[in-house]
Every structure is written in structure tokens, then in C-alpha cells.
Image (cartoon, rainbow, N blue to C red; front, side):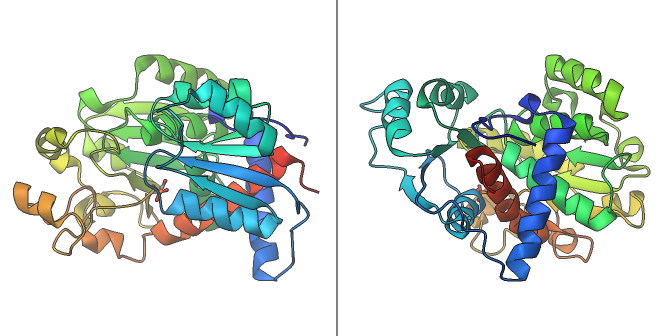
Length: 329
Ligand code: CP
């Protein structure tokens, strides 16, 4: 399959076969890394990594993946001219003349679209408010490694599904034939227009998509229970009080996991607020008198939890995206 020169902005733009190609290539890279087989045939190429929001996994995955492929990286965060003294369009035309590819993590999805419009080289979305496609490849690879299949599995997402993770899970599950359920108060359901689009993909994939407020109904026969932090990057601190009140009943805890299949796994894109008695999230926890938020420490640390397998797979799948779009052979 030839994906050379393609942008990677959202999985809406990729067919199920193309998404599966990324997963297969990532699995191959993972195997090669384990066996110390070099894959550095893109020596001499350079890529730019733009991060307007913080990151651990995505940044490290891009840096390590690029290094393994023989590519040099430039990290651009505070201190660059982007969005301050220079427009996205001008930045794109500058970077496009120096680099073979550009990663962008930022706010509005229109920013990464603007970058892609003007860069003339592949642009990869490292997270926007609306979509997080590289995360989806890692999640699907992790699920496929565990169950051996994707089609027909039931994945339940607990939490605010209006942003990048909820939207992106809706898309990837619908394209690959999973049964996707959002379990949250109604105001946190994904946009109806996106659900309509997903229903079209489900017609050919055999998947389904559903939103419910009912935890019993959602978790029955679930294979994967997935959650995310209740407040996204870029949202103001004022939303914490409302989010905690609304989503506390939808916390993933041992009782929720018991309602799912015995074989069910727990997933989280990370970072997670699972133990606020430590330094992490301590001030927020103290303010609202909670020690655990979207997931309890018990579930996070349980054998059902594949959160760190998922984190590792960020690197293998991002390597596949860079390689495929830069024409790796
Ligand atoms: N899941 C994820 O995108 O992690 P980072 O914010 O650390 O990149």
C-alpha cells in the first residue's frame, strides 16, 4: 500500500484497509525492535515537531521513532515565532522547505489543516482539541495484540466524549467494526453530526455506535473499558467542579469492571489522575475532596490494565505513520 506524501490529520481520511496497514507496519516495527533489526533507511531526512501543548508520550514517541528510522528531529515549543509573530501558513511554507515532515500538537484542528495546506510535506496530527489519531493506532494495536481481533469487540468509553479521544474512538471503532459505546451524562456525548458519519462507516464495517447514560447497559458484555481525564488540556480550571460532580458516577472502579466480561481489559490514553494522594493532582484532589478521579488506583494497577502496553505502542505506531508517509522501504 502506498501512503507516501499523505497527511495524517484524522482517521476520517483513511480507509479501514489503510488503518490496518499502519497497524501491521507498527507490529512489524515492534518485532524488528525486539530483535534489534535496524530500520534506519530514512537517514538524511529531517522532521519538525511542533508542540503548543505539553506532552510526554507523543513527543518521546516521535523522537524515538524518528531516531530509529535514521531521521533527525527539531523540537519547537515556546520560543518559536509560530502563532505569535508568524502565521501558521507562513510557518508551514518555511518548515516545508527545510523538513520532510512536520508534527503538530495544538489547539484548533483548523491549525493543523492550515499547516497541511501550505507545508507541501506530510503533516502529522499529534493532538488537536478535536482529534488524536496517533493515539487511536496505539490503542487499536494494543487491543489487537491482546484479543487477536478488533472486529466485533465492545469498547465502552466513560467520560467526556466531546473532544479528541471520544471523537477519535468513535471514528476508529466505526471504521474497524468494533461496537463503540459512550457512557456519560448526555451533555458529554459526541456531536450528533459525527455520530451520523460514524453510522455510515458502520454500515460496511459491521460496527455499531451508541451513547447511553446507563452504566449497566453500557458495560454488559464489554471487552474494553476506556476512560480519560475529566478536564482536557486547554480547558480552564473553573470546569473542574462541574466535571467532578457530573462524572463521579461514571468513574471506572472495581464495580464497573465487574459488570464487564471477566476477560475485559482497562485502557487509558494517559496521563491519569488515579492517585491524587501523591504529588500528582494533589492540589485539585484536596480542593474537591477526592483522591481518585476518572479511574481508581485499584483498577489502574490491576492485571486488567493495559495502560503501559498502550503507551509503548504509541512509539511503534507513530513510527509506522512517519515511515509510511515518508516512503520507508
Ligand atoms: N496520550 C498522550 O497523548 O500523552 P501525552 O500528552 O503525554 O503526549
